[in-house]
Image 1 (cartoon, rainbow, N blue to C red):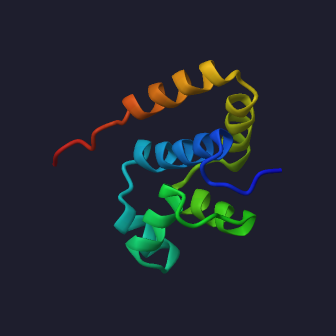
Image 2: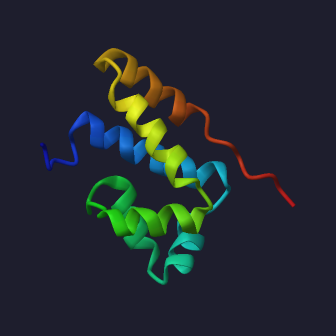
Length: 103
């Protein structure tokens, strides 16, 4: 088991984590407030500067309104892919950032 945040599987995890927050139009600042923390904490989690433990993952997903089981199932599918397919999935997720509608 690797502990590196640079491992392709962990990078896929981080990409999915950011995508869950963004598709619900939650900013890092808003998420930090929901978690009772600072924006820099969320940034470090999402950039891989700080690893998440399971409890923090559950809190993160709950705070953005994501379904934990669905998140894990998606992550399992992505990490089982070939390296080439994983890179394509990551690029696709990054390219599908939904813009928050202007009020």
